[in-house]
Length: 240
Length: 240
Image (cartoon, rainbow over all chains, first blue to last red; front, side, top):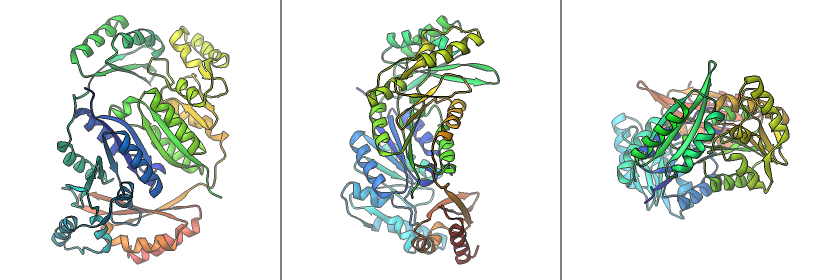
């Protein structure tokens, strides 16, 4: 049985303009891998409604789970929730459960729950809320799409809230072998190894630093004995 | 006149498994912004031929330029060149110009130009080569797609080779204002400002660290006087 699949949609001009280096993709990729959910595709789009709507539809129908990051804050450029509702033809408005969370939070803080902050309680009618222990304003899940904040500390907290609700597969195991020889010298034996171990995904990631070069060979799969055997054979063939 | 648009396609299991944190997207985003080319979308896909072929076709027909990263080395998992050829219905084989570059390079190094390394001379027939001063094996441009290596130092060198061949637009200028108030307090005035300056793209990027919180407001546009005026108005309204 193969693992469930996932895609991620990162929403935000700040990534595409080079202002911000994305951190959420790297975090989510690691979490999904350890839960046995295979991340198959990531898309990054700008704060543009048609682009968001069409990406949500494409990814939601193509993969078991979709995780979005960004665009659910209180400012005018936060349009993700409305785009998600549009993608699924769902109605959206300020919802009592989300408003109650925000009202209690801002009361504790002594801040006003103004019109802008109330935007963060706009949740599509059929969605369930995702807990946000960091800054309270919730994410939400609708169908197979989990909608989360872009601020990394909040994104990570929301991922932690969502993961226990998902059924994972066999965690992907991996081992790597560092070989200080040119990738072109490794490629022949490696290709034969890949043919003999069709269940393993075998990657070669060359490095070159301070005059030392070579490649890290990574074997990924679900059977640790198979990974060990393949690593051992390659080490022997490459004289490592 | 609006700027040319671009998309990027990152190819590689190592990003999706969380093993490697992508660096090339961040680099390319910054370079394109300073050249007046608007990066509109990024996709990350695995080393899977159908996924690569369909992403190349979608992005090539949707944007003025496409930049790919990864999968052009000598090992079995390097399938990008063949996928690009397939996407465009072009023939592909070892090409004399690319083989000559590699032969001279490996002769200087005292290494053998073996079958694996020759894979790196597989270039689609209608493509032009992209210079690689770091490790010689070239990238290539076919139609509006620029195919480059995934190793960051090589990717950066290839981007530097390609950029002078592209016509950019007006560079996107930006200025930011740091406001130590909750995003919910800034959102109202900011929304009105965005309405009054429709030519500017205005983003709000909240921060929270060591008990200090607020938001960096970034204004992007092509007219520096307009950006200055908008920043000044916001600073006054927010009492910064």
